[in-house]
Length: 422
Image (cartoon, rainbow, N blue to C red):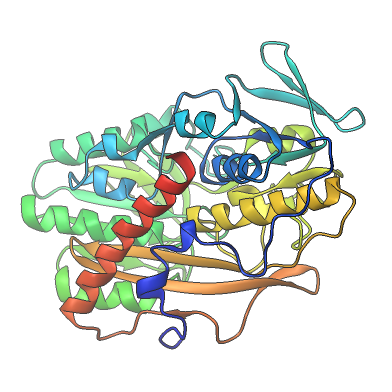
C-alpha cells in the first residue's frame, strides 16, 4: 500500500466529530420514531447519540454504569496509562435526551417489535439497533475457558483482565518468557495483538532485560506488518519473536495450570501466558437469531439491517462488514449510517448512501505511532474498500513523523470519546 491520499494526520483525529460523507438527517414524520439501542460501547453509544440528535425517541439498553474502552488499554497493561482514562459514563447521553435502561436485553419479538429486559420490562420499537460486540469463543481452543483465563489472561475485553495481565507482568521474574497466542481472522482490532506485543517488549527491555515475548500466530500475515517488523528490528531485536503459521505458530491447545501452549509442532512454556482466543458475535446477537452459522451477523451494507430479521440493524464488531475492519472507529461510523438509514426507513423514505471511513492507529513504543486508513462503500452486496482513497504510514518514516502519529492517536481517542460520551 502507498502513503495515504487523504490527509489522515490532520483530519482523522477530528473525524469522530465530522458528518459522514453524503449524509443528511432525514426529515422525521410527525410522530417521533422509536429506536431502541442494545449495547453501550462505541457503536451503541454513538447510535444513541446520533438518534437523539436527529430528534428520535431513543432508549439505550446497557447493564453497566461505566463503559471501559479497549483502545489504549494495551498501554494500561504496561503501566503507561491509568485505567481511569479508559472509563466513560453515560450521563452525557442522558443530557442529550437518551433514555437509559439499566439492564440486559434477553429477548426480541420481531413481530411485535418488542425487546424484553432481564427485569421483565419491555420496550417497543420502530427500529432496533443491536451493538453486541464480541464474545470470546471459549469452545474453540481446547483447554482454554473462563477459568483458564484467570491463569492465562486474554485481556481482550478491557477491565479486570487488563489489570490482571499488568499484575502478572510486574510479578514475573527477569528472564521469564511471555508467550502470546493470536487467533486467525476475524477478531476485534486486527493490529491489536501486535501493538500489545510491541509495548510488552518495550516494558521488558526497560524493566526485565533478560526476558522476551514470543508471539504464536495462527496467521502468516497481519495488519501493518511491515511497520511493526520495522519497529521490532529497530527497538526490540532481542525482546520479541514472531512465529507465523508456516513456522508452527498456530496454538492447538492450552494447559493453563502448567503454563504450556501447544502448537502443531511444539510445546512452549510461558512464565506469563496471554491467550487471545477466537471470537464471535456477542451472545445477545446469537440468541435473537441475527448471527448465522459463522457466528457473525450478516447485514445489508447500505443500511446495516440484518439479513436474517427485518427492522433490526447490527453494527460494530459483531457485523459481517466486508472489507471494513472491526474497530472502535468503524463502529462509530457504522452507527451513524445505521441510524440515518433506520430513521429514513421509519419515515418511509429510501436510505441515504454513504461512504464510511476507518483510521486505525498503533503504538510500537511511547511516541512511536503509525496508522492505516480506508474508505468503504456498499458494492455488490458487501462493504468494499474504495480504491485509492486510503493508505498506510510509510516504512522508513522519521522519528518526528512517528511522534506526530502517536499524538494524533491520542487526539483521535479524545475526540471520539468526547463526541460520543461527553
